[in-house]
Length: 579
Image (cartoon, rainbow, N blue to C red; front, side):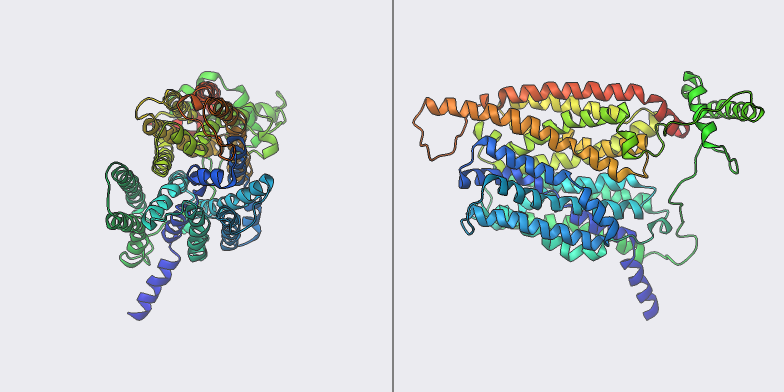
């Protein structure tokens, strides 16, 4: 009995679902960058910054969140727990120092030094993301889509969770939120970092895995719905501190519920019988290749060049027969010297690309610029949400920041789920889902531009959903078109589109227009030179929002061009799975 209990405990410690749940908890603290809209007003007032200076801090934050090359390199050299610890230290030092400055406990530093601190603090997120995603992909090699979508979704929900804890603390000092941003992720990571590791997950496949994922998805939806309800109640109704504390306790209970999955699979199922678990290969075989058939890569490349355009549109069985016949003809002709097989100049779509090879492909740059215009405009809203809400007369900035975090979370979960339905059920290119998300965002920007009653709530809904969907769709698209072998380098390069878009939209366009309008309003009224410039009315972000709406439409067009260019690839990848 004692030995059986010990074996089950060891099984629990090495259960891939335990690693996944620990990664979810770490990711729930990894989205601290989305709280910049809540902490930016106190930084602006404490240090007397104008909007352009504040926008530079926002760009530094976005760069910190997107420059993940160091984190990726360290995760290959160090154990994952050590890489997570580096991120926790960076986060604590960067935001902790900012808190000391804004509260007068440390001397004020020049703007460039503040940008460095924000960069260092937010760069800790890249270590959290890297540790969580690497362990998830390695432990769930056949379920990368759901795993990445859920983990990225929890990163988008971090702002709402920390905001709710801040509301419960009921601090009279707004700078205390910066302290929470510095301390909370560091404490959670230090407590959980030793659980984040590869545990041979490809040997732990169970028939119940589908039900386990369904359960996790259910918890995700419950968490989002609960947070939304709590935020609306606290915004519309005056509630006591005891009620807020109760809301927060229930939130923690929902966050803990996923631990039931590793507990059930370790302690309440028989895991020692050979039929309970299945080992799956880390590298799948080609599905279009007959067993034992060794077709040279050169012939496969030639088939891609020689096959008629309409072959990919045929039913799966007929398509395979036609391709096999063409392969046989080419191999025979090459053997007899009748044709010369061309040497390949590089991989084709769907094969493994290096970053250098991908950089010369039009498809890669279509993804990059579509992401720059789409997610860049969404990030501009997130970074300026505090000023946008204040200009329209909303005094509940933290509620709006929490709401956009929730919609961002649902956008990531939903974007991954529905784009998977598109490719699995219809064999249609995944980027079409990104085009839909960008159209939704263009409408959201229109609501912000005109500032209609309730526009902030509708705008945060549309922008949050669309922005979040990008980060579930783009990684999957990149892996499908350019392979998984060098996925880390490809993905880290694509994430640079985020700060690039923020630099253009927030650092150059939004801040300049805001400051110009604030100065115009200041000249027409009594203004204290010692006060920070502040703009009031929908005019503050009217032109900026219209410009971003237009750029989202351009992004949609780029995505649809990518859809047209990659139809044959998705038909080849997923057409055989259609019924």
